[in-house]
Image 1 (cartoon, helix red, strand yellow):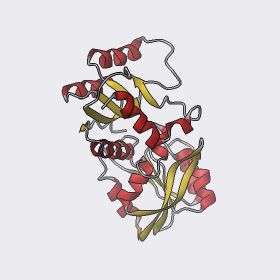
Image 2: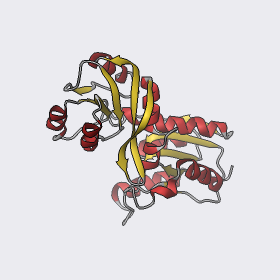
Image 3: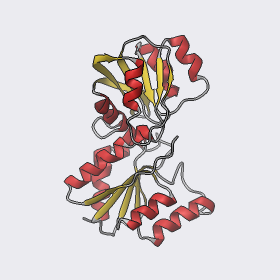
Length: 253
């Protein structure tokens, strides 16, 4: 498959154009000649030298990541930017990044897939962001206890000690999910009256905001909550007849 066709398919599936100017990350093809061919695609959460080298070792022609190398553009190719671009060029690997479009997607998105993993029925989008949303609101058929939900999140790839701000009800059934760094949406969670917010990492104000709102917040790790989206894109790519490799590189954060 031509790289240009592969990129066009991903752009279309993820509705990348709708997020132009609304995401501080640059979405779509970040590095690579559109005239290249692609037979083998690697997938990882982070676009860094280590994952580039592992993609090369796997024989990949392209790497699809959630966190790319361009955040608001690249003014100078020096320092870490130079090291990363050089690793891609030396190994002739194209880099495709999907940040907010992958968070938002109702089928392939991180939040949608995490809801599925937790057995939640998605009832509405959550986390107003850009032209759409960054997360999902789900409902559990059988309510979780705090211990049960924490244990389930601990099974995610790369999850360490799942932190819990345990301020919600004893039974958790109305659960907002926004992967990565999602505590900025606690006000929306409060206004909706959800029982819990599942995200990756928090900020200092989240403690008191959650306590005052009566919401439990589960911090399962930024990396751990954002592996499912790229894995979904891997499955999609296999349906297109391409070979794939998933690169696991947990950060513990």
